[in-house]
Each structure stands twice: as structure tokens, then as C-alpha cells.
Image (cartoon, rainbow, N blue to C red):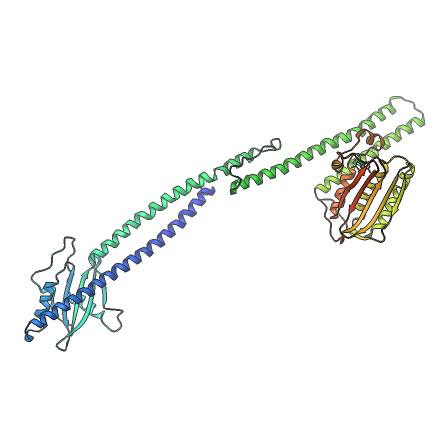
Length: 488
Ligand code: ADP
């Protein structure tokens, strides 16, 4: 049961509520008890004032020889209240008490009998008048809530007397008992009611989560385009659903890219394989062939096998780059030297196509980079420039020190790339002119994707700066201070 969030929430809620209500009840009970006692004590002080005033008046009217006792008795008769008893003492000796009166006060109809004046209760009460006592009031435990006693000293004819008043605490204890009973019912009732309400509220609010879980469970590779419904996009659950949907968008896109990559790759591999198969079948179809014919067939087979190897190598590079597993080994190197080496290695190719290749060096430029990756990027750009520029054309590779860092540009005066296709040239397997490209060079459309990845792995960039009938210009920008590179 406690495995669900709503049960745990409810339990926490009920626990906290119970503790809070208990604490609150204790505080309320304590405050009520205190104020009830204060009221009782104030009543006792008032009663003693009135008693002593009556006693005073009686003494003034009576002959001096009679003493305090008859006046006190008269005062007690006049102060007969249910639940109250009086006693007058001198030097600890009981002179007179309301228990001696023949006419006892009525019960008051509430079982509120007046407390008994016992020697113990008087002694205990007088003890409250002692020096170390906190005050003149004292509570005596007993049946029906016990007794509150009040002791007060008065002087008459230069003798000291004590007046003791005992008040039954029955009404106060009844009030407090009613409060205890009410709280005893109210706390469990409130906790049960609030917990049930909390449970249903949590259930109602968490229902969209259960719905999202069920829907997310149903989403698989084939239903990746399904999305969660977003109730209120501004609340927490709505934001969760939106974030989840965005995650699905990214996954969908990645799956789509993967699917296209596999489809393009198999399409790309099928052509050279078909040529290999067809050419070898032709070579084997006749039992006797001239050495020239065999050589010719073998040359075709070799060409296609090389192309196949190049495509597979490029695909392998990109898949490792995607997985972040392609190692990037950085070291300090001179960019101008690397550019010169790359130009040198394609010089024969350019000459074979009657293309003038020139290098424009921007001086000594030091970078921290992976040499083989950087030269692979430059060779891809140079290879494209030579491949797509007609005979008699011109290809220039130049380096320069820009404020943002070293730059390499590869330009040609070939036919360029049409405006609408320019944004797509860095896509994998993209070729602007499928038929021409394949017939001429057999490129798989991966060269620029790899070159772009290499630039980015060095925290740089590769872009087509311009392209038109006058030719194309590709720019590689490397960061000024090359310290790090990543393999994504
Ligand atoms: P490919 O293997 O086809 O050369 P790339 O990724 O290197 O693949 O290039 C993608 C496409 O961009 C090419 O097919 C070509 O149409 C176009 N392209 C690249 N470089 C040039 C260039 N210098 N001039 C004209 N078109 C180019």
C-alpha cells in the first residue's frame, strides 16, 4: 500500500496533522486550565474581602467582650455559598468553622457539596501561607476535582487570626473534563476526515501521472510519434508532459536520422557490390579471356572495392563520432605546414584534371589539433574542389590569422552549388547532382559531414561562405587558443 505516492503523502499528512492537533490541544488545555484557576482564585480573594468586611461590621456592633467567634459565625451565615467552607483560626487553633453551623448551605443542585473542614486540610492550607510558599492559594487533591484553599491573615484587637476558605473545584474539573472529551473525539475525527480528503485529493491530482505512465508504457519504437496529452501546460504535470514530449521529439528525430542513415548506407553499398558482382560474373562467364580483358575487369573490381572501402570507412568514422568514441589526439602543429602537405598530396590529382592548385600562406600559424583528422578535413575539401571544378579551373587553399583564431579557406571557380541545395550539403549522403557525382567520382555524400564534424570536434566550425557560378568558398574557423577538443 505504501508503494504509491498518494498513500505516502496521506500518511505524512495524517502524521503531521495528528502531531499538530495534539500539540495545539495541550496548549489550549493548559491555557483554559490556567485561566479557570485564576478566575477561581480571584473569586476567593473577593469572597474573603466581603467576609472580612462583614466580620468587621459585626465586631463593631457587638460588645467587645464577646470576641471574634460570634462575629465570624454571623459572617459565615451571611456567606453561605454552595461549594464553599470557611474557618477562622488563631495560632493554628481552630476557633470556628462553617462545619459548626446548624444551617448548611444547599448543594446548588449540581452535586457541588461544600468541602469538609478537616485538620489536615487546614494544616495543608496554612502551610501555603509559609515563607517559602509561592502564594496564599493551594490545591488539595480529592474526589470531584479536589479543593482549592485560600488562607489570609487578619488582625483584630492586636491578635492575629487566619481566615481559611475552601472552594470545591468540581465545576472547574467538570469543565476541563468536557474539554478533554471534546478533544478526544475531535482530534481523531479531524485526522480521519482530513486524511480521507487528502487521499482523494492526491488521487485526483495524481491521476494524470497514472495516465502518463500508461501512455508512456505504450510508446515504443513503432509508435514513437505518439505524444502525451498536456492538460494544463503551466502546472508541474503539464510541464513534465511537455518535457517528456520534447524528449520523444528528439528520440523520434534521432530514430528517423538513424533509419535514413541505414537506408542511405545500404543503398550506397548496393551499387559497388552490384558492380563487383556483375563484373566478376562477366569475367568468369567465358573460359578463355585475353590478359588485357582480365586486367580491365580486375581494374574495375579494384576501383569498386576501393570505393566500397572508402564508404565503409566514412560510415564507420561517423558512427564512432556519433557515439563519442572517435579518439581526438591533440598536439601542437603548424597549420601552414599541414596545409602545404595536404596540397602536395592532391597535386597529382589536380594536374590530372588540369586544375591549377595554389597555396596562399598567412604566415606561421600554430594550433593544437589532431593532425590526421585536420588533414582528413582539408583533403575532403580539396578533393571536392578539384572534383567539382571543370578542367582548366583554379583551386586555392589559404590560411589566415583572424582575430577569433586561425582560418583556412578552400575556394574554386567551379559551377558552385544552387541556392536551394546549399543548406543541405552537410547532410549525410547528400549529393547535389546524384548522377554526375556518381559517374565522375563515386562520392557517397559523406565527405562534408565528416569535415564538419572534425571542425566541431576542435571547437571550430566549417561553413560554405559563398557559392555561385563563379565558384565556391568553404571556410574553416578554429578557436584562437586550442587547448581542448571533444570527440562528438
Ligand atoms: P561527395 O562524396 O558527394 O563529394 P560531400 O559530402 O563531400 O560528398 O559533398 C556533398 C555535395 O556537395 C557533393 O555531392 C556536391 O554536390 C556538393 N559539393 C561539395 N563541394 C563542392 C564544391 N567545391 N563545388 C561544388 N559542389 C560541391
